[in-house]
Image (cartoon, rainbow, N blue to C red; front, side, top):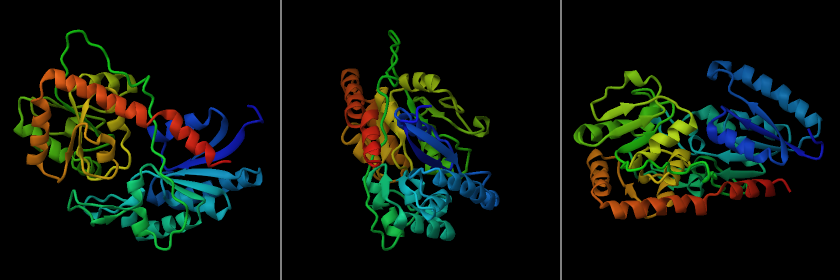
Length: 351
């Protein structure tokens, strides 16, 4: 390893795909020392803190100064206490509270205090979309109306800079299937078990209700945990996690991508589906209306009849209009959210 590379810390609770992508990006010209905090859930929290403390202390003594922390959580506390220039990436769960579906870091009093302390002492807060600082939940009744980390953290003077995720347009290219017509509706809901909080947060109950009312339309759910536990009909298939190449192929064969979530930060799956030419239908939540912005449909309320109507509108469009729209949705992500833009903005924070 070259000693000319600057060394930084990158801490996270779990190594999600978007976390791995950040680390890969930054590693092009930085020596990134990564640390996974979550050692097994809340019962292992003292052990997680102990391991992180010793690991960070060694890094601090060695002269490392900058730390990126993906998600504001327990793992953001020790970096600020140990004096790192800490840049907290806010990505969704750390900007909200939805008690009715057991989602959102700010529904937990002790975790809220830890996040507030870390945010007030961080060098910068980096939401993946500006709406995560403050937004109104008008979409569902599953959480309070006032949301966003500035609502939950009082006396917050830390500089805030929104830096969206970036996407590899070369990889997420639409497949060419000669003579094959794109059809149906697809949704990615990574890790959702039937009836669990992720299931409701991703709006799968709504999607399955609509699928039951639209038997002539194919619906595909991807990334589910225990797909066999889902009650399905002949027009619904539920698939588990899959490698990116297969995911790309499945979405590229679908006509519409549906993200009817109660809460999202900056959904990678939505942007990747748009790069693949799937026309989006999204809920009116945080970044999603901004990402779509006239190219697709926005669901104003958590309503199965409204979702069905939005899907029918798109499915009823003539093929030439849909094809033109597919080109536009791909161009939207390619032009607005390239990988290099995020990398350059993250780099500038280290100067």
